[in-house]
Figure 1 (cartoon, rainbow, N blue to C red):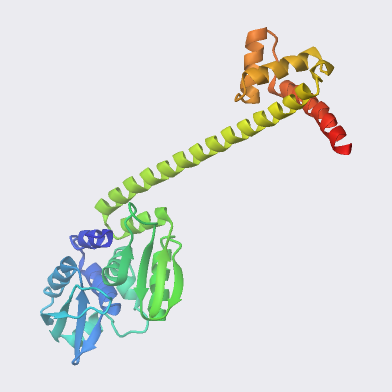
Figure 2: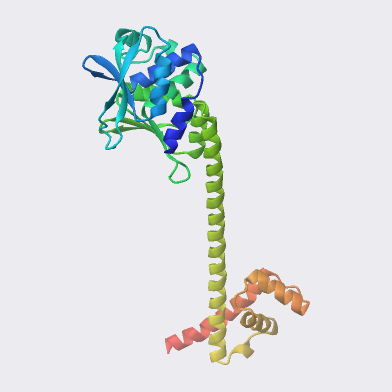
Length: 307
C-alpha cells in the first residue's frame, strides 16, 4: 500500500464530533462530487475511505445511497468505488454547502472543524510521498480556483507555507518541506504516520549530514595531497638544479621531512617535526619555509623559460 493510502486509512479510524463530521463531509463532497443521472456521486479508489464515508452518511436519516463501480480516468486499472446518493441530494447540498462559492464560516469556525475539513479534502484529493522512497512532497489537486485558495488559506493558518500552482485541469497545492509535511500529518490526526515519517526523516537527514561530512573530509584530503605534491614538485626542481645548499638549515629540515612524510598535512607535519626534533614549529612557520622553497624553485624555472 502507498504511504498516501496508509495515511488515509488512519484518518478513517478517527472519531469526530458532530460539527467536525459535517466539516469533513463538506471538504470531501466539495472536492469530489459529480452529478450522474441527476444524482450526486462521490468516489474513491480506497476501500477504507468509502467504508468511512458510508459510516458517516449512515448517521443521517435524510440520506440514502447505492454503491457502484466506475471507470477510473486517472490511468489506473483500479475501478472507482462510488456512492450514488439516491435520497437526500438537497439535504447534502444545503448541509455540506457543496455548491456554495465559498465555504460558510460556521462550517470551519472552530479548530476541530478546520481539521475536519482538511481531512475531508485530503481524503478526496490529497497525496503524500513516502519519505523512504521519494522526495518530500505533499499535494492537493483541486478543480476550482476559489476552493484552492480557500484550502491554501486554511493550511497556511498552521504556517505550512503551502504553494499554489495552476494546472491544465485545476490547481495544485503543494508542500516540499519535510517538517511542514510532518506538521500536516499532526494536524489531521495521523499520529502513527507521524511517527513513521519522523523516523525516516531523521534517518535521511542524518545520512545526508554524514555524506556531506564525508565529502568535506574527502575534499580536505584532496587539498592536502595537492599541496604536498606541489611542494614535492618544487623540491625536485631544486634537486635537479643542485640548489638545496642555497636554503638555510631550518628550510632544509622542512624539505627533508616533506620528502619523508609525503601525504601529511602541514599541521601533521609541524607536529611530527616538533616531536622528533624537540623544537616547536607551528603550521604557519612551516608554511613560511615552504614558501621559501617555492620562491627559489620558481627562480630556476623562470630562468630556464627565459633562455
